[in-house]
Image 1 (tube, rainbow, N blue to C red):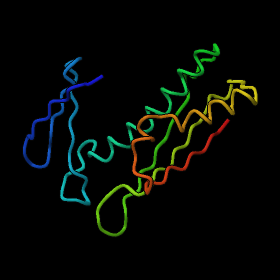
Image 2: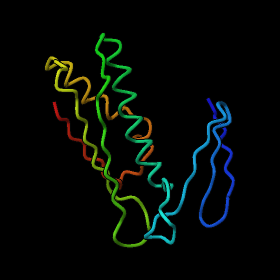
Image 3: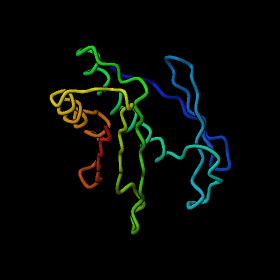
Image 4: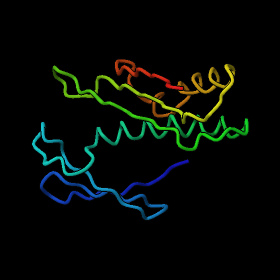
Length: 137
């Protein structure tokens, strides 16, 4: 399946991206440490966002099949850039926090933790990009 994203450069390191199927748009800006104003998501912030939303979506698909609602589950992603050239994302720290009232069996926990590796975004990252995941129950 292919999806078209139309991107226009707006000037001053800002871009507008349009998701062709839905018409939804989002804006990007370069980060302050790379000449931008940091007024919105940077392209690498979107990568972190893609990773976090992909992980919770894959987990929710598995949970749904087991009649488990993950509503209220939080995913926090901390993105680290490399300290030496080339400029790239070097690490992601992902913390998944389940609602306090969610009672998961040990087998459900194991299944949900394992499925994180099936996230297509994570599978698309270069092997040199570290993804550390923590689960808080």
